[in-house]
Image (cartoon, rainbow, N blue to C red; front, side, top):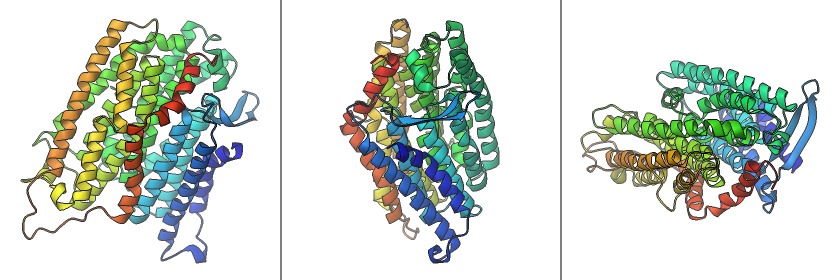
Length: 517
């Protein structure tokens, strides 16, 4: 198990290096480009298999305990250690990352985005996977920062080199926002490590802030939280996200929404809640206020984009919806209760599954129609996917109702638990304030349903295909292979939430109690 986790984190890096080498003559297939794309599928597939084996070998009776741990010295002068491990909080995100990376590699094998050499594309995809996996596996503050930053360069190039219109400006906006936030976050991490005398996240969580004064905790939460909030993204630090999603290639959008946004909220749970509880208690009402503002803002922005005549882009709309959905994650974290934090972690995974599927589907619609402009798609009679590509239309409708939180699907449980957590926040937090936040968040779910149902109406419904119009292709075999796991897991998580909550709840209880349980 110990070796397996190291292999999962380091494997994609080795695969990235191998992708840049010439393919052996016997493995080139029809062309070198096909060979390197197949290499990406094989490497991500092996990492996914290893992650599944790790999950099966995980001791589910003790999900609060760090398992598959590695702890060796690295920079002795700073006491920085290569410390890896997984528990019930990080394991689902680790598997989700491996799954989405494999599905993106598989999808790219059949539909490589227009741009430079596939060698660079595959290498960047694998570096991105390695950095994300490391973020969820490392247990040292300095290593966490390094892993957190590793993903920035590959995502920048995926947007700038393989993106669509406006890709250069979107890529620069993405990296400037995230780098500026990261500089402040690094200062906060160093402050915690120096004042506590250790960068070890397990030891810091067990100490539960007792080795840090309240003023140090407040400064640390402000600095670290700012960097995490940019990546989440929290309103009003979200403005890089719609541009990045709109310009990114399909697989870039899937990984950005499905995995990279989770790194910010994971940092709140893994670092700030257990390490600086007094500082979090000080800022929790403000975090909740920004969270519900993001829920309402994201929904209103989506309603404006879906309005006829607004020339709204469907990818941009899904990006703004992510601002709202991540608002529920932040609200759950701000409650500082087991119910709210479990809801946040559940919503994290659900958002990765559902929004990842949505970006795959929107990419497919754009490939078929040549545009993601809602007014163009709607036209006089609507894109009418139900009649012209019934399987694609049904999948898009399924993903939208999952995104709006329909009971029985994954999107329901996280938002409900976050609202329940706000109903009874942690001791020391203002209950009237959080009841107000809960009411605003609940109103946001109605706005979410409104704009997503309008999307279904405008894109999926409409009149029959006019005579003489070229028919569009329905779901292809490779698309079916890439999307089916996301559909199945969305249903499974919705009907059987105990699979995920059984992992996260004991770990959350221990984390909030300072490692005493």
